[in-house]
Every structure is written in structure tokens, then in C-alpha cells.
Image (cartoon, rainbow, N blue to C red; front, side, top):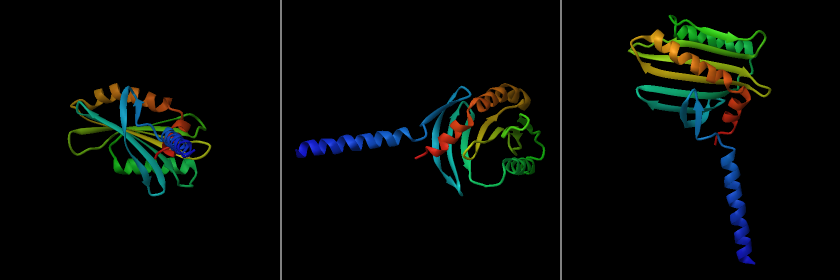
Length: 177
């Protein structure tokens, strides 16, 4: 009788741990042909985030997904983001992709850097039914011909960012441990 009770508790504990792990954000994520490992998750102010990344062959990639807690309307948040990007990167040419009347925007640019490193930045900001979610992809590399590297890398990363369903991005953030 006691053995059966202990065995039952052990099975219940195992199921609880298994269910808890299945709700967590995955440990790795395939993005633009790269396997990115989960680096960290937590809170930044009242926003929830999860960050994935990899360093290989002189290229560093980071994908950060963030659930935005700011109650401002979507358009105001995107406008504020564009202004802050322009203020931080005055020489950068921003490319903004948005379907008419859609609450889903992709912003891409090469970030200004003082050294020889170049950062390709892609932001996707989407309004889901529940929240606004931002996915930020950053690729750092050292290259002589910045334009050539941008042409090669940007399209793959942009397609990968556009292909993710914004609700799945939100699931990554809500399912962090």
C-alpha cells in the first residue's frame, strides 16, 4: 500500500516535470538556416523576453523576442521605434515593409558602428489578439564590402522573420521558464 502511494507520487511528479518542460520556450530555434541556442529569458522592465543566438565563423547572430507591455496603440509604438532607430543611427537607410492597414511591420537597416563591425538589424513588430510582440534579429559581422554582405544576408533573414507567425513569436515569450 505504501509502495503504491510512493509510486503514484513519483509518477505524478514525473508528469508535472514533463508538462512544465513542454510549456517552456525551446532550447534551440531554427532561424534563416541557423540553429540558434536559447541564451536567456526574463523581464526587461515590464516586458517579457527570450533571446536566442550563436557565434560562428566571425558572425554573431541574435534573435530576441519581446512581448511589449506598453498600452499605447500599435501605430504610436512603431512611430516611436522608428524615431529612436533614426536618432541612434542617423546615417542608416531604413527599409520599412508593411501591408496597407496591417498591424505587422518589418524594419531593416545596417546599424552605425565605430569599428569595422557591421550590424544588420531586422525588427518585426506585430499586433496579435493578445499583445504586441517584437522580434529583433541582429547579425554582427566584419566585412569590407558592406553592401554585398547586406544583399546576401538580408533577404534570407527577412524572409525567415516574415515567415514566422506572430502568435508563435508570442508563444515563445509566454512559455519561457
